[in-house]
Image (tube, rainbow, N blue to C red):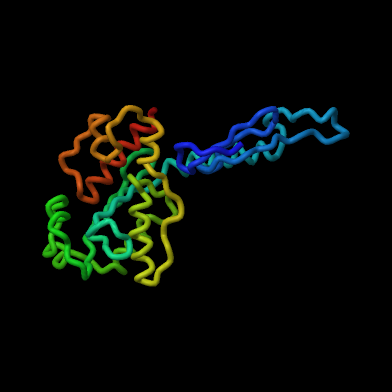
Length: 235
């Protein structure tokens, strides 16, 4: 039976009276049917784990997956608003993580034709003058993001928000989408933490006693997301 639940893919499986089992494959839950012996090898009982080629391939895949999951990029964007079509990115922050350590970082302002609302400036401290004097074009920003991210897993807090804005940037500049794999720290927090008033970034950070005094700038929010991600992985 497939039923809705509060996980990243929105559903999971319940089985009864079957040898099929639910198994994780690169973040997606699939149903696995155990291999059986050939008819001339016995009574059709299930092979002992580790004997089949499939089992060996599975072990290799899990080993590669474990290695790959230790390298990822944390992303955060500041924008003029929340409408992917009308609003624009004004700042990008990226952290490259390897073996749970920060090995590189990137930050830039992005020029746009849309004025920054007063409320956004009050929240972030980013002004129109800063964007005009220090910002780079959307095309340059996209190329820098693509170069920094490569094929790495992207980790973010409500990561789809960031991905949607970058996708719109991609479409406007005529480039190919750079982000292939994502992991949402917000969804992880919802699964692993109980009894929070809400799941805003600052609330979850406070739950782990993390400093939130420098929030609402792209690179600083990346740092906070990264620290929350580490804490959630301990649970």
